[in-house]
Length: 338
Image (cartoon, rainbow, N blue to C red; front, side, top):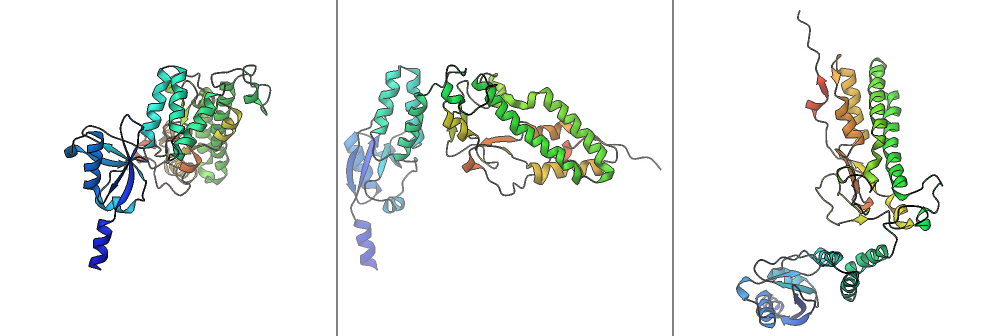
């Protein structure tokens, strides 16, 4: 066993290594991480004392043990003090910075990244991105981009009006579920439940079913997209952000418009499992106390509780999140003195 371990420790492996601000890669053969740093720093004239080595793909920092596990020809990045690398995200970020320069810079940056045969994930992202560049994203009217409107009713004259309608339809469906839930309410509390639902329905109509969330012409604070129409996945209910960086621009072409319909406006605190049962219980057990309907309204119909998520980030199992008991009632009816 001892001889076998010695052999494993001494095996030579070959890696492709690069540094920041350069696409040039060099093959380096080494037996361990220290030898890799020594040869890499000599090749790129960097100080060994502050050197770190990370995976090009995702920025994971290497240890001696990890180095043994990764295959030959894995692409690595050699970093020195103050430098960081987040993998493909870093390359994409540099590419996007080209938008602040000339169009030719965008093309040159894209071609350079696409020429890297060892980065298929980057290739897919950029191919999709370049396809969108070629589309008439900023066009709004039907006359400007007839292909985008194929299959849609003639009443939609511009992209933003359809996208607003698309969002309204989703929110309307949530209200329909709330209304249909009336049958499940105890008869003694049904009238009060209906009154609250009617109040929320009136409020929802007043804010036009929050269709502004998908409308890129709205003010920044009112929409979920950029002014160009780019939407980013907000991640599943239990995370702060999407680790996969899903994004889409349904304003770009017909295919993206259709694909966007698979994205979910997901309730963090769940509608059927939690919010509606909580509302029904509050109405039944409130003993005349005033229900804080705006709290339930926000949970059901607004971005206070809704997250826009790519279908891959939509977790359908129980969220195990509860309503805030301190927010259920506006005021509690005082008990009578005996």
